[in-house]
Image 1: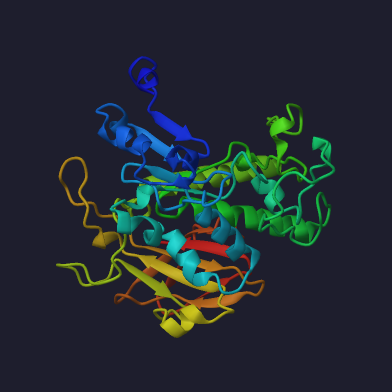
Image 2: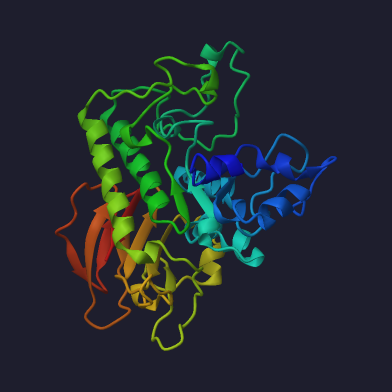
Length: 370
């Protein structure tokens, strides 16, 4: 590892099946000798260390349990985001936790939101296109009678299995892909995007395509309107994340009045624009919520020692199939909300609404407002 850092100048390492590195005899031990050596090494302790925090053995699923200095592929983020946008009930509370950095997994160990490598898809499993196009795996080409690959995909085909010409299903699939991408780039933590997802790459439902070195896994660069629109949408999300520091906080939200400020750094809202109550969080059917992120309540400083201040952002999420009139909050007098992104509308930039009015949020959609 030192050779690759000092001689080859790599920035860090991603460890496949990293829980295996923590096994001493049989059990996983986060204080194992391997982690001790890495932590004490003057070179390796300063580079990026990314763990795939599971392996094949008993007790190998170790998301949230790696030491300070390590980041992790957050499998719980992947699963909850998929389930929320699939429309599963009872997911809103944990979905909200994943959206703001998974403090339940990382804060207690002294780590920050950047410890969470957020992802929807990776090289294992469905691509994003297939996640919204297939209900189950289709791995016949692998030669194992479709017995290989996971059956636990939390996927939804939007009404038809595989390719279709139905315009309603295709429109819904496009919105769902945008929902996943928008959630990924507007979440606290580090977003990880699978190559090809930004252009709608499909593996025809194969979720275990490691053995396919052919057109099934090769990325197609043939232009099409759908591919270019999805690529442009992804570019917009990346630009929004880079421009707005409230989506890239170094520390977890506190959810209370910040010293010297007049507002909390985060508000969770129901469809009436009111702050979420315990009863609202625990309602099994809640699939619509909003989150207000205060750009003037960031307590961090930039590289010049200046306090970081960004725009206050409002993100509205509706995972139900029904349209919702979401009442925009009036957290200060005369507030005007400008809609800069809607996953059902590629250009809502001109729409402005004052706080206290309702925005028609389509079913299966996300809107970002400033």
